[in-house]
Length: 436
Ligand SMILES: Cc1cc2nc3c(=O)[nH]c(=O)nc-3n(C[C@H](O)[C@H](O)[C@H](O)COP(=O)(O)O)c2cc1C
Image (cartoon, rainbow, N blue to C red; front, side, top):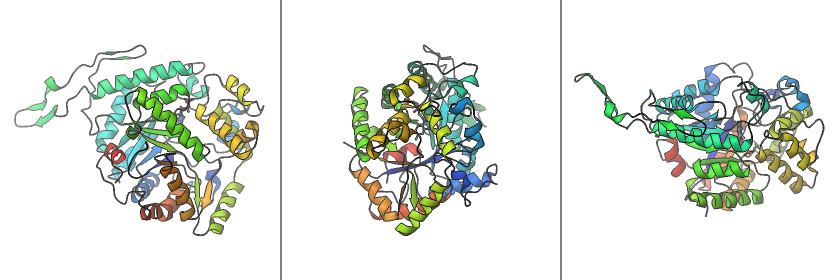
């Protein structure tokens, strides 16, 4: 059974000019001179809230992928999806100018300690009045590990073991303050009721923390947990912890299969399909007419630098595509790095388009180009067929994709009754559970 109600929309963001669509920064309408201006991020937040998106989340990595030709030169030199700012500095700017938009941060459990994580995510939940989501990642390329004193990423199982330990520790920390512990009564001189604040004394197999946090209980209690791992272990962690699950699937049928698999895994943890929003990524190019859409898509595609696609996909797969392997060999060479979801997407794309895995691995991401009606048709079909609960939308061109979706696709979805006209809740969690 899929979730009742309406679909959810999340924006896939980066603190740089390119997100997952290679070479997006080269579009003449994509601004490059305001990346360090607060106004860029404030305007983005207003735009997404005006379009009634559930959430904008920043994808993030703690390094520059250097898998392709064993150097970062192509990735950064050609404009891969780099983080040019720490997203935790940008999200408060977005919180300041909005009241309902969810704010997602990607933070790695492999390198950060629970106390740091719980404190900064909790602080953001407090100042945003309950709108924070945490994209829990275990990190996926060795360049990240080398920035934190490791030679390579630990094995995936070990990373997911630690992720669960870190999550449990964070939850313990977030529960260390009762809701009414902070009194702030000048008259009596009682600042806080210390009886309502506890040591946590969390001791797990990988992390330990005593607590209590220095910050009080947050409006959501804990941030909305978001997970995007697609390996069997990643899916199990999502089934146990996540409230939003991101995936990349090539076709509607692959989406239906993913949801069915998640439903089985959720049941093992005593949860149901209605407890999570499953959101595949969808890249769109919207035009007022079909021919405008096709022209816009052709232009965007003409900007794509094939070497950047190779560098980007090498990073995602954890394998150097300058020496193209079979899927089996790619998996063997990737070892602990790379993402299963990306490998699955290449396999699904190869099957759907009748091409080899190696060809699929060298292609830029596909995009759905069409009129608002054509795009809404696909979105509604996937949603009603149980292939998803909504979509994660990356920009093909920033911020035009969100202006176009907000101006053209959202009103069409609203007319069809599959997307909210107003936010129903106050916090992100409330809006996820009640899509209006
Ligand atoms: C929409 C989407 C966004 C993602 N964003 C990030 C990210 O920002 N940082 C990251 O390290 N991994 C990101 N991932 C990758 C996964 O979270 C996961 O770490 C990766 O797929 C490796 O795990 P797996 O092999 O279990 O899939 C993303 C995946 C998807 C589908």
